[in-house]
Length: 78
Image (cartoon, rainbow, N blue to C red):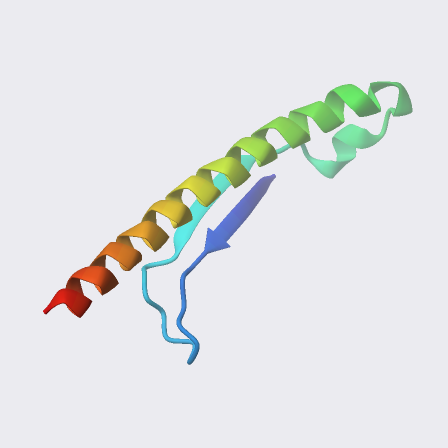
């Protein structure tokens, strides 16, 4: 099973300013949560990759956001 995060930067009118950033990660199948004794171990297999994917997409979209700021500032100078 996969979880996909998609982030994009849009302006106030909804115009896309950057190509959307996609990050996918594998997580356990829902059926792996059948055994209550293994819940925390299975949840850990879910949580760790999701947190890593979230951090990666935040890093990528922040980079894109900062690039837009630089582009905007450069355009203002002209």
